Length: 312
Image 1: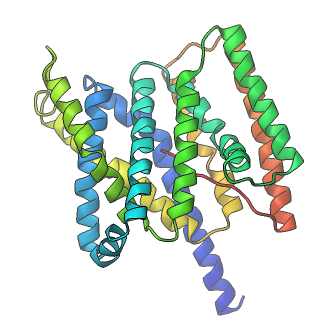
Image 2 (image 1 turned 45 degrees about the vertical axis):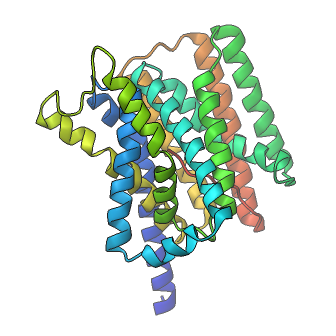
């Protein structure tokens, strides 16, 4: 093996490790948030926003990224896009926390199972992209799965659909501004725009009979809650490092680690109800994913383009 090939292989290995680490961390996030009980979803998201901003500001200082950050904030167009991205990621975080802390982790996993397929669909209608037959097949099968869950399980999967819609559009925005906005600067600005929402949420929670939980349930709870910024930023940075080092097809395969872990946590570890009708819906979704993965492999062999998104 030549030095060049060895270096290339080492780079790919590191990329898989970085990306895999990101998706593993995203997969165990439900367990972390459950440890924050009795903190509710509205307070958790508020602290997540504020502490993510603090952590990102520290990272900008350590990595000497202020020059790049300054160049971004001098462009009104980029600022507007980061503000919209911030609103979308806020919706995603809030719905995810509501689902996780109300016993609907399985449904959150459904949202991330169908998220790659949703991204392809958005590419067709928003970016006017042409997609392959197998991608259309995956979209159709996923739609059947949602219909089965609604009709036979008797519950509209609003959590799953809200997650996939918000993150799908968020992914389109990140794709648009990605070349001009690095990961740390982007998350910094997105968190900054959400400060008013976070402050209002904390004020509203403080006005309830239960009040804020930060600092009122022991040191260990405060430390765990204070870790929310790191838990948010680190997977995103690992993901960014991974995507710079490996083929997007590899990322496309790894991304299903997160919803698989979330499904196991919800259905197996926590014992959320899985009646036959719900199993039927998920099995149909997994068939759609199988078609999607086959399409990814064929695209890789042909040198085609692959659509990949990141996760909460």
